Figure 1 (tube, helix red, strand yellow):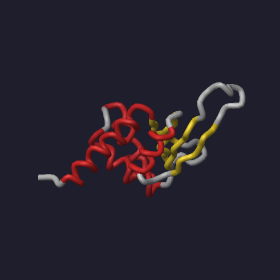
Figure 2 (cartoon, rainbow, N blue to C red):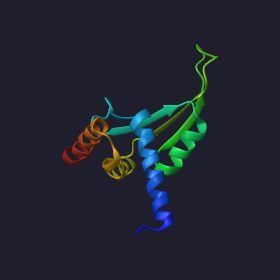
Figure 3 (tube, rainbow, N blue to C red):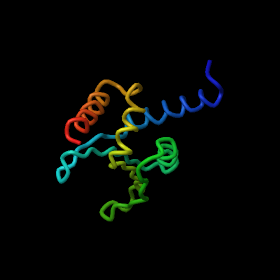
Figure 4 (tube, helix red, strand yellow):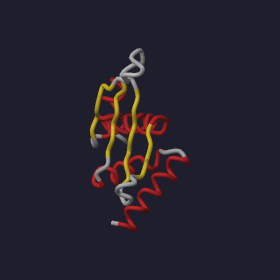
Length: 116
């Protein structure tokens, strides 16, 4: 049996992973081929702040506006690149990720296992 707080935490984690599944990415770095980045950006400040609070790692930047598109909404950007942030986050997200994003997460974790 789960406590009310545990259920709330699981629901918040599922929400967080769902947002990352739809808007986030797991990428490599050409300058540092052994490093992986978790990234996400969108125009919704409230969603980005909630995600940032949920995940608890990385940095939230913004708002950024595009000088060539002044009528566009400002963009908020979240990124995590430190190994001590990326690995635990991927492990936490892994059970809830869809197939395609799970494959990228597995590849990133394998990369850390074999190169670091």
